[in-house]
Length: 451
Image 1 (cartoon, one colour):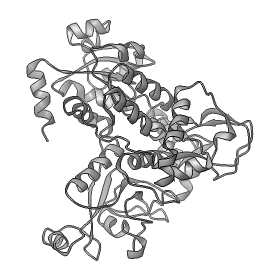
Image 2 (tube, one colour):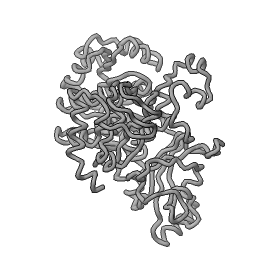
Image 3 (tube, one colour):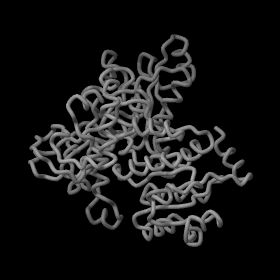
Image 4 (tube, one colour):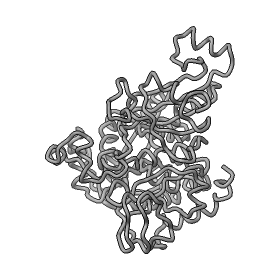
């Protein structure tokens, strides 16, 4: 409640949080738009594969060219300006940096960046949720061992869901379900970058003019991103998926308490304490008025007659029994809100969501019949889609994490709808992300089996 006041104190004392950003693409640019207006903060350095593109984004979001003109990190610290370069190792290793914001969107690289940051005593705000879905539990463990904070990024839906779950539990309410919204129909799971714009209602030309990335947008549409984000939520909150994954039941905001209650009571939930994604479309494609497509929600329980009377007295929207109620945010502001995580980590040493166990996983699943010798193209592509599984099921079948399903060759055919397994691909075992993922599966397998 007082993050802003604490940031102002730091500004007044000349003790600004010193931040480094890795990746200045869309998400990073949105954060950069807010940095000049945030007290108590010095963004000392930006590392990007293309510093020229990073500078274009800085000017696009309103930075004066002089603000990012520091020729080195030393110059940035002496002048209060920002250095833009391509050397992420130097940024992470600099002892003057307090917090690294990892916003590359590349899960393999993000694991490297996080591990290096921990080794140099840096806190990490992990924007690349794909990395958290792949290795979050063991990254959190490594951060604790290093005495630093590892955090999901506020503004992205997983951290916002974690916030709602925390609110409910801290208020004394049992959490029945939580999740996000999504525009969904079952056939979207087979969408490719060639079909995505039609489903979005755009022409390819409109998408080209807007500079929109079809693979990235398709990762949202085909259900991969919802599965990734649901995995992060489960591993951070203790909620768990249904054994069959996500159902995407349709509902308006007002109907969430009706839909997100146990099946035995007329709802869609397999069990209490479940993660789920709500569709903004009816099964026949009709748009639902007052939807939660871009938002997040938590359903909580009034487990006594007194609490349910309070719901009634204060006009709380509930299911017909009066037992289940919902709190929600209809929108999320993505990178514009990352400063909440930076401030929370920097002044409170608290994450805005962090894995506490291995409860869920997002696995690469064939979009079509795949042949031996084909190369997987990862999230949002032509070959695989992410599916949410319970962690114990993923470990039991030897499933391949979606975050590792890019640029790897199949050694065996995989039928449409079937998971890709470790044994089905040729994997570069020298990658830190591969080693860490294997270590996590071994270390957390007993826990996952008991989840």
